[in-house]
Length: 334
Picture (cartoon, rainbow, N blue to C red):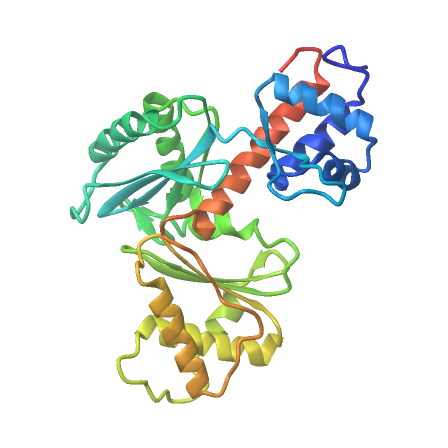
C-alpha cells in the first residue's frame, strides 16, 4: 500500500530518510546512488519531507563539472536534543541542534555538595526555561547521563538500584519537561553504540566530576582487558610537569598498541578546557617512550558535541527515525 498519495514504496521513503539523517547535506545524485533508488523516486520522497519541514535544502557552494550548483538536503536544523549530566555535586544541561551546534550550555548549582531531588526539580525547570529560548521548533528528546558509580545514594553498579533511579528520573522528566523521548544511562553506555564495527577503541571521558575510561572491541565493552591495559609496562619515569591522567592514557595506549597493533584513541571532555594541552602531554609521553600513534588522536572540543553527546544523539535519532518509519507503514499521515 502506498501512503501520502505518492506511488513510492515505503522502504524507499525510509531509505532516503535514514540516508539524509546519516549524511547531513547531500545532493539528489548522492541520495540516489547511496540508497540505490531512481532519481525520480528520490525527487518524490524529498518533496514529501520538504513539505513536512523535516528536510531543508540549500545550494552547494562548489559547482559541478557542468557549472551547476546542486541543492543539498539535510535535516531541519531547528530540530534539537537535550543532554543532561548528573553528578552528586553538579548538574549540567546542553542543547544541540541537528547540525551539531551547541545552543545552550548551563551549569546548575556548581560544586554544591550533596545535591538532592529537590535541586533536580529546580534544575529541570531552569533547563526547560533556558532551552525554550533556543528551540522554537521541535525537541527530538532528552537524555539523562549518569555517572558510573553512584548518584543520590543509588549504587549504579547494581542493575536493580540503577533501574529504580532511572524510573524515578523518568517520572521527574515527564512532569517537568514532558519529553517526546527520554533515555537514561551512563555516558560510556551511550558511547558504545558509536563503534559497532571498530576492532578496538580506547575511550577516555574527562569532566569536572568524573574520570572514566572504556575499551570497546567490535562494539562490545571489555572491562577485563582494559584493567590489564592500565598496568604500566614498567616503573614509569615521569616527565617534568606531566599530568597523571595523560600518563595513564599513555600507559594504556602503549599496552594496547602492543596487544592490538592498530586501534583508535578518543579523548572526550566537556570541561577540560585545555584539551589540546592534554593531547600534547600524551604525545610527549609517547615520544619519550619512542611510541608512535597508529592513528590520529581524536579529542572533543568542549564547545561542540562530545563523544557522549554524539552517542546520545545517535540513540535519540534512531528512536526518532524508527517512529517515523512506523508511521509511514501505518495508514495515517506524518
